[in-house]
Image (cartoon, rainbow, N blue to C red):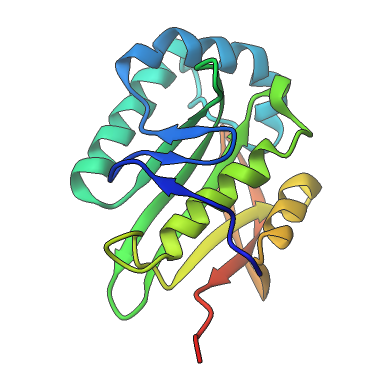
Length: 195
């Protein structure tokens, strides 16, 4: 499978044909909250981001803190995707990065409701996965990337499969999205052995 072109601008910024993916920062506050308000009903279905009783402003603060702590510890790489006008179109996060016998991370993503069905998620998820599986020092050197996807989320399943993720048998988990628990099935993308 050909890898999408991904330019590594710095250790924290990736660039695709249409997007820059970088850590969330304080200057994103208004744009992030705008996207969340616009997309909340859509996101609550499969990617509920708010904790119970959490305001949009509190959500931004929590996401900013998660981004900063993940960068500092190396345990996550949380990225927002910005188009050429600087508009946030979604978030693409590699969490729970482990470096033991297997180097792996858990991937999740969401896209703004006004950015759906234009290939944005496929392009950005592809960039994050390519970077994650690329050898050090040009990538993160991971062996595999896991994506737990709700079985009812056909769009995300198609994205995962298009990018070479394979459903891992009957492996599933009950994960909380917002204040509800849902069955998520495991999809895995592994480094392909070279000959």
